[in-house]
Length: 215
Image (cartoon, rainbow, N blue to C red):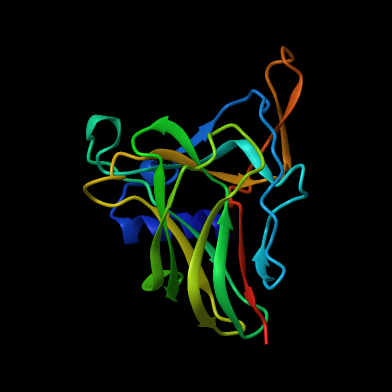
């Protein structure tokens, strides 16, 4: 229930309807392309991560829709996604790695930013946006979309947000993509005995990692 309320809170921030914020994409076929994730620079440490193993970082065929205002021919609908993280110790964030992928329409680029928290939703932008180009294709695994930031201080026990979105106009405003979910299958559903039991992701948390230095 807490996660459901989290996404409802984001609706108010983005002026979206409930249908818009809970819009998900799903492709039942298993990924045909598998590449290893990018190596973590030796100087960086993990401040936050919900990623799985190197061969199963995230659900490559399930995720939240991520689009710009001029996507699909300009339907005036934009879907932005935010991932909360809380550092366990005082740190400096310098890189985020997320499972944001390109769905084959619009400019192949997305903006990533770090926000402070405002009563449970993203508040003031603290860093970014950083425009990342040439994203991995949707339905593949396990390359990540990586954004580098000038080191920004974060405080232990304080919530922050990684936000993925597209610009409201210009290049990138027609972006169509997805932020894949964490590989956490916790519910099984059947299709009237035809296809047998299949895992259904009801966690819904976007997959990602926050890196930096920890004094």
